[in-house]
Length: 198
Image 1 (cartoon, one colour):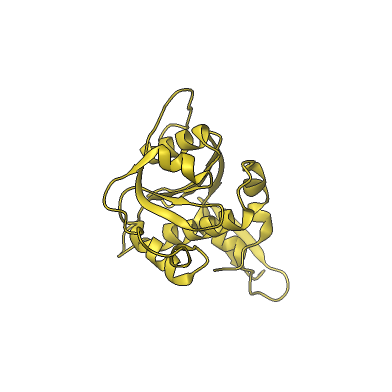
Image 2: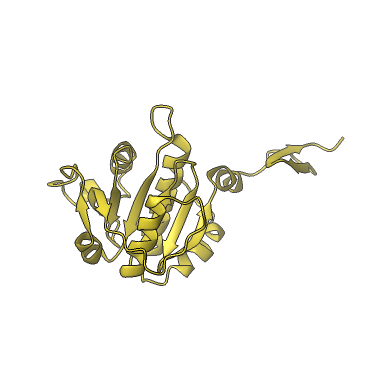
């Protein structure tokens, strides 16, 4: 797992007032960023992780196919296990959501989340995956992390969008500029260039 600046997670993780483990939520968000950036086989993919309140989430969802994680040990399904993370990246290509315990164990994959639209208001342009994330977090004490096919990660809590991560900006914040001494930073049309002063 990558080192992550804590300030990126301060607001997102503190806004999630559901008693979700910050360490687990950070691990899920880092995995979501990796999925958004890497995609699979040259194409972008979308997926969703629902973290916490596992029993209530399972009651409000069903499997779309035979669960590929069924029968595996907790350690094999724990997100801190590097092999598990690579497996989740592969399974993210399949439709449906991952259900993750507060201990970081993925208990199920390829889940269809039952959605109720009562009083859910989302920005225009967000689709059914985002609607499902808003709905499940409204009805349970879970937090949802959605990877959009546009490569933006959105975090939902209590039926509302509480955070957005644009992977390129997130990655940029993790790396320091390699220039010694002063440098210029210019941004135009969402493109940032860093250079030595002339």
